[in-house]
Image (cartoon, rainbow, N blue to C red; front, side):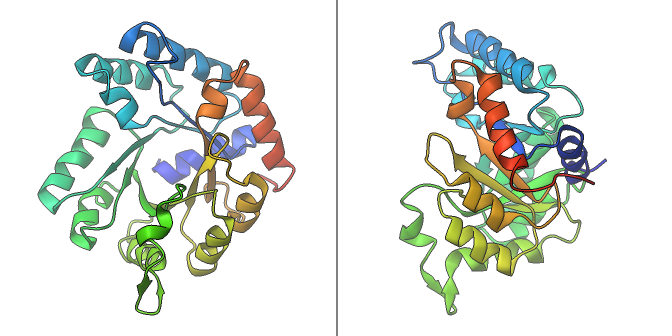
Length: 260
């Protein structure tokens, strides 16, 4: 089963588009790396029937040093096998280095998908996409205010982020490529959907203030794997993570029908 097959099956089975980001903050979680693992595993237990995907961000585990990598492996092993996991590492480099990044994510950490940057071009991206059973999300239009500094620059008469989307389409021979598109910019979500049929990962809902309803409407193309909405802090640090996840899931259910 490929990543997008697995994601689609999990979304349909739970009738949800929700991805929960697992990004521990040592200022908010006691006990170091082991405490972070316990905390996030507990959140997984509270949300596993409400989420179709989990997304640990590499930096939040790397900050704990070697113990953080051990904790991340423990967390990965604790996530139910039918729920895919995206390693949000945003890797980018020349092809030989990208090949090593991909092996680390897919073969060692056993992640189902990886986020990457496109700046090095098609030969670099090919080192990730050749892992055809795994997913590769290309960062396209980010959720932070600084996105406009470079991503909106004119490139051959179009915003640069549209050129990134076109490059992602070109390297999608195996059908395992998606785009990261921030939910804080629903107008750009809509513009990208008009140009691209690739699956979208929509970060920025919750603490970043992204517009859930507008972004889902803009991104939805009828494919349960084509519109994955990520929430991290708003679920992770909620008084009741299960309730927070359920509220997000139900808001999305009210917008679209998630069915095979």
